[in-house]
Length: 607
Ligand code: SF4
Ligand code: SF4
Ligand code: FES
Image: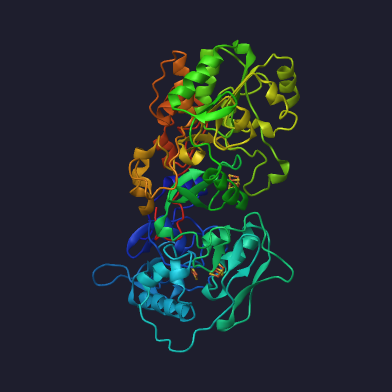
């Protein structure tokens, strides 16, 4: 009766049936009804090699890499289980191997993934796949993170019996604005075809021809130009699909990939920032089942990082006469503080930012309300209805409106352009203090800024606003900062710095790739640019201390711990917990979402 498995009370309560259990390589694994063998194996930490299966796509079962032996306990005529001489149940294995991705489990099933027939099948599939695969690895972008390479080491014999000429197919076919297809690298797993149809909802790809002439084509007159097209590059298990933006920029083993959050809209997709030589070369998705699953939009991937690499304000500056000059941080802060003191609090307008972290906005709010003793504090919303869709993109094109609102940075004095313009014109507002946004882009306001008596700006990039500002604080971008944001679903997510600055240099040392690691403040031969910028909360703290605030936060985590102690919605949260659960919903730190094992397609990629 050992195969009438333990009673799982939780499962029973939820589904009204006993929880099925199966044995994979003699390891007892808990399963859910209707799961396939590969799903149960994955959730139990057992890797069954596969190319075409992907947890978010339909099952196609065409690569045959996941073949396993499957059996069930033998029963006697009376329905009881047959046992061997040692009292162990006899297992009836099916005569042929089964594909683990399409075979549903049944209670008591036995699966062998390491037996001789399975290994022989894996070697045969690998030999078959490699017959026509070009010897492209030295020039292929996927090399170093390629599932086929990884499996060639792990599951193939290492020798080919193929002496005929390889089949050549077209290389460098453009599928759309962002994706290139190399037909001879393709192993016909159909992941891209299924992604286009099922996730991107742009059914434009199909297999054509047969046998070793099979290839993928776009439907006549169509392009694969979905806003999510670049996800096929990530899920393609080989280098058949490459990014037009990234092609040949770097070998992946020269890069480091650090987890972060996309600031492109309020979805807050989880990303990996790919860096070499302290410069961002590409953005990849990081899986989060509760936010973006495995996907990113192309816009977020391509449009944010160039502004972090280029046109940066790299050091604090103040305006003497009519020119901005680089100064020390202390000089810039003292200059800003002494000028702020010249005005009444009601004459200064503070503008927080939905592009900045909770920590930044929280300290700005404290500075304005408790130290300057003003309520002139607001932030600017950036919405675009046309950006929103029903997959990931939201109309709020900032990552942290919810955070700004949470810290009271709204509606105290609405930054409606006309309202602000009127107040500047009537000299009611004489000073603007702006947290990281180029307000000069707002039409109607651009001409009014010249009428202000003093402008202080935290800026990441040079802009018209930095040209007319009196003080420019060089602000770290999100890629150089640590902090938290609250996404559209009120999920608080933590992200860490990926790029090195003078401020975080020592701390970042261990996270960098081999081309970054050896650079230091004194030894800059490997470094692209080491910026003298600071995180916004740290700048605000320096300024507040000029007004005798005596703040002593040493890190953004200190600021967040204070937020968690003071505000009920954040109660129980800390960076460690946020990382562990990949985010926690506001007010629900004690009830996190179920922790599920994230699917990782393959492991060779450097972290
Ligand atoms: S291009 Fe890549 S994802 Fe598409 S079928 Fe070929 S190997 Fe699979
Ligand atoms: S959907 Fe929004 S958060 Fe996600 S990648 Fe696109 S812009 Fe970034
Ligand atoms: S993963 Fe099962 S057949 Fe491809």
